[in-house]
Length: 194
Image 1 (cartoon, rainbow, N blue to C red):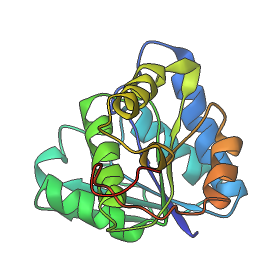
Image 2: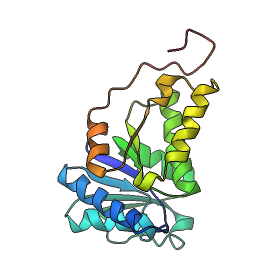
Image 3: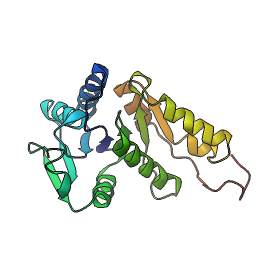
Image 4: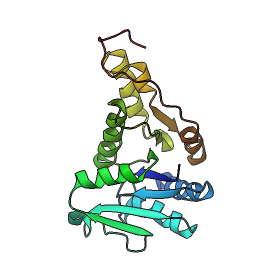
């Protein structure tokens, strides 16, 4: 792995632990020799992680659509900033540039980006690892929903196992580094469920 994409909020959230986790994640990436790919903003957790990587002399690639340049306040101090035409182009380029993915706390955008990359893995479009940095149990309800989807036979257990989860940056990086992609067949009912 060379570059890790981090999806996270353009807001800080209510708990100081979110900002501290973004800073720690940025520092951990640089310690491990990874560059950061992210949404290109200079505000919220996005700006925090980018600044932490840059302060530690790491590489940061931002990808932001033109219409968000002023809303998310595009970060002008990055190693490289790609300004693209659409959200679709943003996500495709972030996926192309990245070897792994992590979601920190965030809102709809963070969830949508994470779930799209998860769906691409489920469909066999990539075998890159991805995980949730579950700061202060922020993602517990989402993980419970994934478990419920298995119980209700909307997900196979092998697909549920795609989502790595840890509460500390170093631990999530360990999980990503040791990831072995499972043999995936998405469709339930077409074969014996594993």
